[in-house]
Each structure stands twice: as structure tokens, then as C-alpha cells.
Image (cartoon, rainbow, N blue to C red):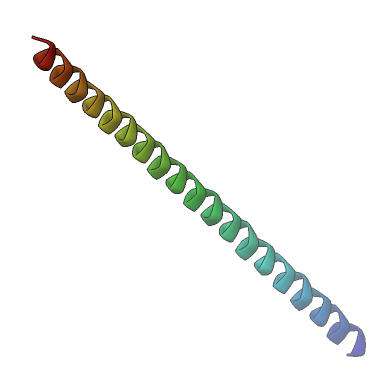
Length: 69
């Protein structure tokens, strides 16, 4: 009986460790996903900023050209 109990306890502990490992893996995957989403958002922001800057520079060029003419 004692032996069986010890084996049960060991198996329960192993199960708990496996479950915790799975949770860790899932959380790591989620963190990686979140980082990816943040990177994508950053890239979109950078692209938008580049667009805005190019538009502003275009406007400035147009204004300069109109002023010179």
C-alpha cells in the first residue's frame, strides 16, 4: 500500500509538472504572438510616419515651386 501511494504521488507530481510545462509553453507562445503583433503594429506606424513625412515634403516642394513661379 505504501509503495502504491508513493508511486501515485510521484505520478501526480509528474502530471503536475507536465501541466505546468504545458502552461509555460502556451504562455511563451502567447508572449511571442504578442511581440509579433506589437512588431507588426510598429511596422505599420513606421510606414504611416514615412507616408506622412513624404506627403509633408511633397506639400513643401509644391509650395516652394508655386512660390518660385
